[in-house]
Image (spheres, helix red, strand yellow):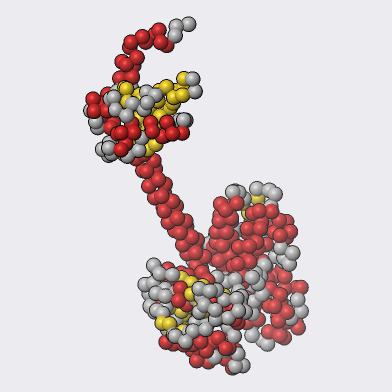
Length: 472
């Protein structure tokens, strides 16, 4: 085998000169004895000024900010440094060669990584931009999902959306009234997103989730050392955090009377007093409140301040429960099925029989309960299609009333719904002895049930007819 030394002989310099990398060699004294043309270009220096000089002298004179040769002689091992020369970014590596335990030569390689560094920088910029677009896309998807929850075929809900569109750009206080799970927080967020404050904070506080003392400190904040266990730095309250934006007071009916006085000042004058402070703070906020309780009745019973009630109830928005807007249930099923398939990586479908069964349920937990049930069904159903048996397993309180109803779905949507409603009422009404009992069990009011029965020309026994009071 031919040795490298025999192969190149005196041509080793030509080999080094052909390299795109800068190559420098220092001897055992740290003196520069060789420098190729590429190194001259990279360092922007004439090699005649470098050759024969000691690396330590070049360092002292400021020719080099750092010297890899000096570092190698100190550490007795391979060293790598980064240098900037004339707008170029260089990676310089020095490797020692030993003879009899002492450094004989130091071989130095200089590589221009300017373009590579720029590519890495550009990649970071692109990745950062992609992350920004990803967050924006997720926000758009979230807004679209919320908008889908607000889209409705129900006349009452359509009236509500028309009202929301008119009041959102204003500064008026809004009181959202509805049972738990109907989506009061979704409506509050929609108002904020379509208001002039949409770029500012939307802060929510659940008035029923905290004790009176915690609620006060969370809402109004506190000064340092104002009570046992208080932070040494104090705390900014949510009212202050919402400055310039919207403060959403969920379940306002649960707020203790003592705090209602402080809240009245905030609603009325936009001022509040942090716990332990003697100095009032002023904020610019819009207040949206929500409740599932009858505040008028609470006012009569002295459980809720009348003046606060009227301050909050400037524009009331009453959300009907899901059982009174069953025409939206099919869209909700499709929406939640798509959402949770995407979330959990499934492609589940749902049978018509299962849909009919879900329609027959009264949904006391409203839209929130429906969303939870669909997510549960997507996860626990072993088959690709969710069937009625899966629905019954997932819902212990589910009744199979009406689930076996079969009718032709080949006309208008409203006709199909009417047909299903008629068959549903006809099938289950024989289980009850009074209008009141039936209404309570299927989750609608007596007056609504009477109207539905008259619409489909359905009659109970003589006793039920008597209860109807001859209003057929």
